[in-house]
Length: 199
Picture 1 (cartoon, rainbow, N blue to C red):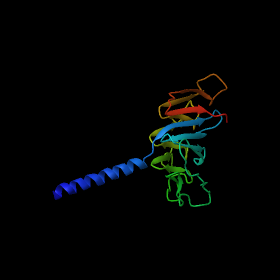
Picture 2 (cartoon, one colour):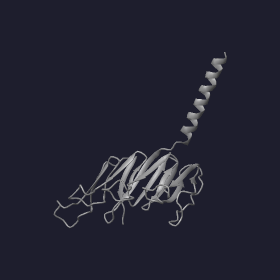
Picture 3 (cartoon, helix red, strand yellow):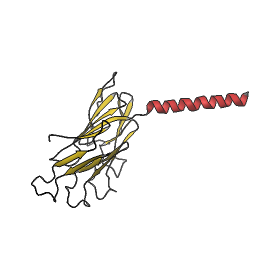
Picture 4 (cartoon, helix red, strand yellow):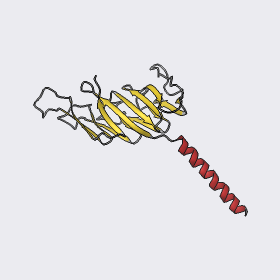
């Protein structure tokens, strides 16, 4: 009986641990990225997390706003100060911790969003020699790529793909004065979409 009781307790503990990890996990329900004809990189991002929390992120990689889709969440107050040691304060959105890259992340761009709960934000850093330092590389499992020195006919620094969404621009092969402007965006889905910004 005793071995059985020990096994039962161990199983119960394992189930509780799994439930705790599951309840803390976040998923990106949908992600909308804005890009522009007139600028490189991503202008802004809107993430819907767990179908309940809307998070707006600006081009500097900082949170602009949060909104609850269902229920109430705590307001997000943090605004990283360039003169401070980023990341020393842990801020929250509801029960989700929010962290920024800080002085301990020696190869990464300081002051940019590092994580919301378990969702990681990664940027091109000092090891990515062909990419623009500080440009967004991924959010969770959504990968982002850019036109770089290997794309000799295309506008460098412009967003090439976000997840499965492909972005093409007027390039040197096009007989036009519209070089660098968006030509097509293909592959948008409800989960990941790229739209054009006015600026």
